[in-house]
Length: 88
Image 1 (cartoon, rainbow, N blue to C red):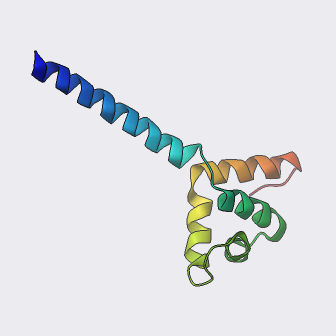
Image 2: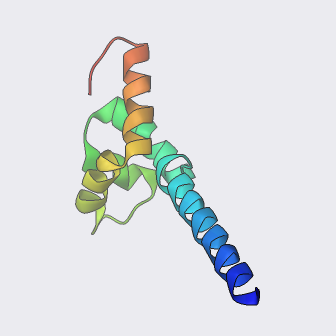
């Protein structure tokens, strides 16, 4: 009986851990990511936008690219551009 309860609890913990990971990856955005979206909207340059958002100049090129690949950032940017009739 104890073993089955522990197994059920572990399953519940794994499920909520999965949900939290999903939330962090696809829903929640940091202030830097929000700033990156605003700057990308102005410049249309991922590297420059990443630097102005507060990311390191040394890694801005890679971070700019990876930010554009993140589903939550891409969705927010697409919605912002659609609002003014432009495309990504």
